[in-house]
Image (cartoon, rainbow, N blue to C red; front, side):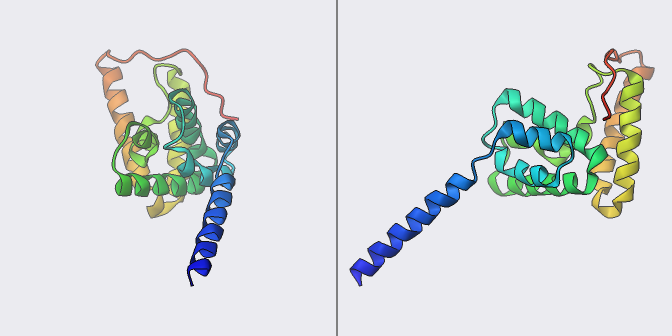
Length: 169
């Protein structure tokens, strides 16, 4: 019985190591895929959020926001998995950067991009989120609030827009 137990443990350990090895992801490849709205890359995002560097986390946050306008349902699925992870493991600087609250209220950086790009992005995201119905409503509500706040700041003369044009393609 003891030999069977040891062999089983060794086999399980070996299987576990092989399974762990297959989880290794190329972060740059995932970021590139998410930027294109690739569904497989979007499914890989939740596996990266605790392992990504600060520099790469900013890149990932930006492409997740971009994927909202090109692959909306799949992006929402990835955000929901991240939200579930946050709920189970608790808040952390990196995890919180990728949840629905962060990505949907982030839109694009109004300090970097001009007003026209910002509003065009919002318009595209809004339309795509509306098409998803109830699935996109929480994200849309967050985005609407964020945009309202920025427009209010603009009316108050407190908003300084960036000068860059957003690349929608």
